[in-house]
Length: 385
Image 1: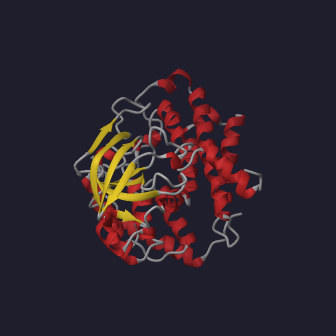
Image 2: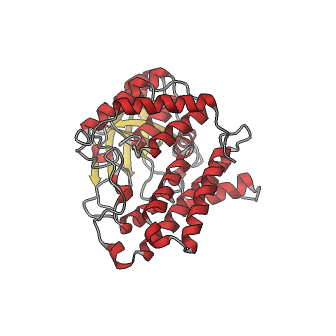
Image 3: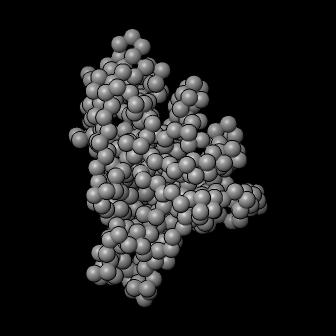
């Protein structure tokens, strides 16, 4: 389905468009580029604060948190307008979309004031400490320990794949606070300042390039964290973790649709008339129709897994075909395979090799494809566990 035009939504879209026309940074102002998912250049910090102050950063939130109490269709219009103009929402995507959003849902008023608002205003940046060497998709197997003594936790353990940790000011880390509880219980969420004694961050290169430094190992040794940094109730971090991933997934399908549209544009020279290209167009249309259905009154939260699975795997499959169709030239790296937009992230128009390599993140981050298939089987199809 496609929602019919709603005058209130279109007025909302037009108001946001006028705001962008009046306030967008110029290409000269946006010359400095981001080095990681928690490195926000000065111009991007100022731009994010402008969005916050205007109520256009997270329109679904109240004004004190950078929004204007927008409806879900209005929030979609906001993201569609950003995508249409190729404007990257935030160069600290996990900080904005997961950490701050989780604090607004589960945090205390003090945590919202001290941590969420500065993250939203890009005064500080944040990273998400979930995965561990022995706990990737199975987050409940995490081993990082936090022992509470009085009003202070002592944290010991290791995190891995922690995007942007070396540039972040704070981690939202999931730790085990009751080792005797079943593995889905006894987990808590802590805000850990990265400058705290005992926190060591070691960035490492990705498959895209040795100097593509975003992933980190994070080592926590006798790190002292005040109890006031506990997000949500003690031992109920699993609920916070599910909420964090929920924030990440809700309108995530729109980013996959944008990647598919990029592929339609950039691979047309080798794809037009071929079956895989027709499949790309079909997948894009299906993703948008299913996504719009999620805005209706009968939406099923479990269907977000369908969108996540369809979108991430469609991007990966189409990226592989584009790589293969461009032949040896596709392995030229670094390279640019699409138009440059100074307010967007250039990784989306990098070499065909890099675009394919980065597509794997979509089938892993926010819950792997295997996890999504399990959710679909159990919660939508009603199959036994």
